[in-house]
Image (cartoon, one colour):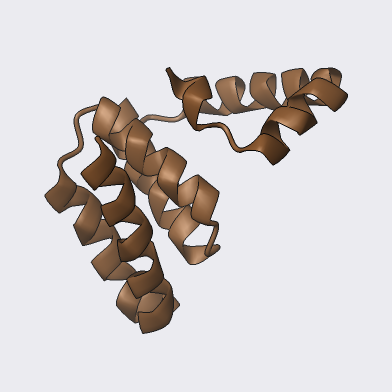
Length: 106
């Protein structure tokens, strides 16, 4: 089901550089395995970083994954609202828009 959401550019990357994609995936799994957070907290942290980076695709992906791991829309909105004082109002409002598009589609 997650593959349904992969952007075309990422699918092209996977096809063109499968060895790099595999290495990146292995690194991501290694990092995930050694962090002390549960899956929901891990996804909310990654969501916060994606918001700060203004990475629309990563925000959308981490919203979907956070919801899959039990995060509520209120918790996800709280992460975006916290970005107002850290990342700026325009960044937070953009993230709230991306979050709404994902949560409305679920």
